[in-house]
Length: 120
Image (cartoon, rainbow, N blue to C red; front, side, top):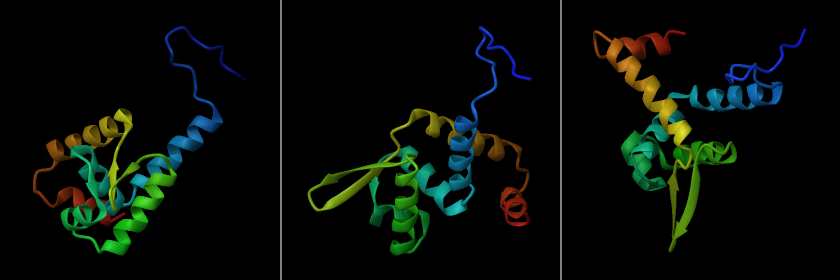
């Protein structure tokens, strides 16, 4: 039974919107990709700078960026010979900041969220 749209904007999202959101959250479920998006939310960077910041191998970071770019979570532009990456969607930045901020505020020992995430 379908629910009539409400004027408050609380109607159920379409199946297509839910699928797109699940795909985006699926990509952000990787700690490495989440770290990359977090870093890019702080400011744009090339792949070498990102690899140094997140502590990843250059080819792995490049592959993560390709996936994030294909999903529309990250964009890039060419600056001379460099490809510079950035998050162009303020909603993605808001979601990442909100989640990380809440988890940071909840953690008693600094390692607690990491243990829980890796223990799943």
